Image 1 (tube, rainbow, N blue to C red):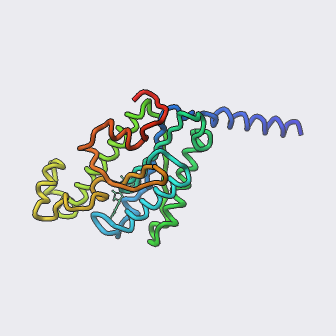
Image 2 (image 1 turned 120 degrees about the vertical axis):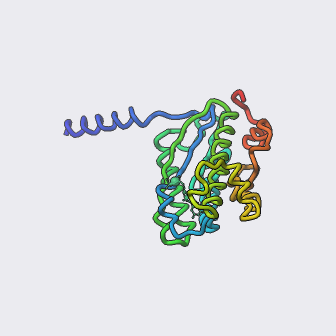
Image 3 (image 1 turned 120 degrees about the horizontal axis):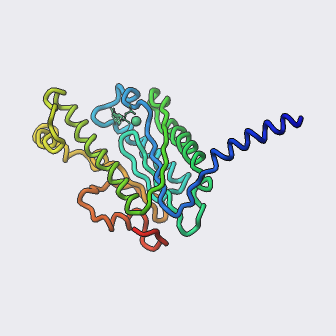
Length: 236
Ligand SMILES: Nc1nc2c(ncn2[C@@H]2O[C@H](COP(=O)(O)OP(=O)(O)O)[C@@H](O)[C@H]2O)c(=O)[nH]1
Ligand SMILES: [Mg+2]
């Protein structure tokens, strides 16, 4: 009996020791979800963009937002970036900010919502991984979004390029040059803003979905757009 207790206590000790690390919400926490092996899973979907795929990702992003109450969410391709921030009420992050719990539950919730949102059999096998990390300031959180936004526009241009030109024709060609090559063929600028810039969700009373070209935007205005005006803050 005593042996059993000490075994349980010992195991709980390991668990506690290695699973107790948490964020307190005083700095933004970024959680990035990414579809596993979507390159293969999306075989047979429309190229360069499949509306059913985009719709499922947006619906998943919205459901995750409703369930976990992040400050903002961004989705593009097969990925979703969420940001949590709760400086006024420390430890009010989901699961008290426990790193392993937040990371693992977000991955499974994303997988659940995505599978429910699609009627395409192949996509019902989708899985998502999640990585979470704290950044020092709100400004860096916006920079993280900008980083994903740049990835989105780059991949969007490449996808339309690859849809219209051969691998050989695109070798050594920059994204700006591909945009020029596409003019008069299948102009990238004429694709919808969601396909070029991805989709953002921010909260006023409820989550609003919009697409914006972050390249032309003012950084301070973006911080206000994503974090709101009157919050207690860490330094920008
Ligand atoms: N056909 C199609 N494929 C898409 C669409 N959205 C995302 N994908 C695919 O999803 C992949 C996502 O990239 P990445 O995460 O790097 O690939 P993974 O590691 O295989 O999941 C892209 O390379 C595309 O092949 C879409 O709307 N249509
Ligand atoms: Mg992926």
